[in-house]
Image (cartoon, rainbow, N blue to C red):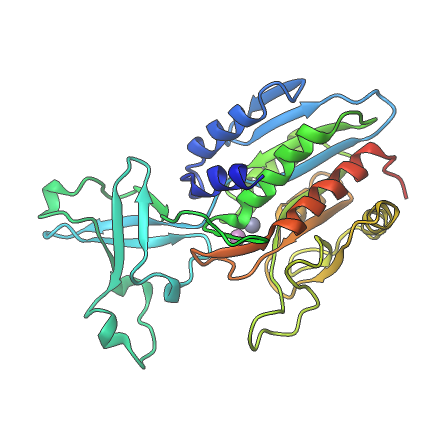
Length: 333
Ligand code: CO
Ligand code: ZN
């Protein structure tokens, strides 16, 4: 599974520019679905027909990652940019970004990083990207071009670190679930969604189109296990987290209890997630049409929205096991 995670996380795919990730996933799920389609926004939807006895289940993991977009190129060829999704300025100086056409740039801040020592970080307008251009005309990218962090995955043993673990790890869980799910009574739509980081837009349209009975997102959640972290009862390596609540939704109580029950029956470790910020595709699914019971299976992740997001591979493995257990059994409460 690490190989799959490496491929997915190293791929380029800031929100609205998910083509490369989508092509990669399409290859991985070849032959695993009864029907595969791409909708108008770019969501990749893979359908597995059940035996007609179960329910219509929508699973969602987002393909997009946070990034930046060029707003201006100056005479010397330096680029100014705005953010795509929740990019955090302190993570930027010294980091490299990759554009769709393969151009690589390094981010710095006006007056350089040494000048910034001990001071409050300036606003985003003071940051720039250096693509090594000699002047404006030779810059290989321009206004409107998008970039994402450039990083290789590092294998630390039980833990792996990569950019875009949010939410390529969710994509990996869905792909692996498709591989292992032999028989299900449910009609399952595996949705690899677009534009989550800019407001859950892909999940919103795909949920409307699919009109599911039940929705489950797979995404990352924060942990409380690093120095001076805000207290949170989620740690790396203690199992996938079953969402109870985040800033955007209350998980459907029946579905949440069902997820807990399936974990306990199968002897899969799990944690309960109460996240004071952020939300997931499940929030958009939940308020679709007349309302859809929705929940979320979260992968505990450290250093979220940095270029080095860390997960524990055992949590990922257990998330797959739990998802398979949920789909193989009745979904009723
Ligand atoms: Co995110
Ligand atoms: Zn996410």
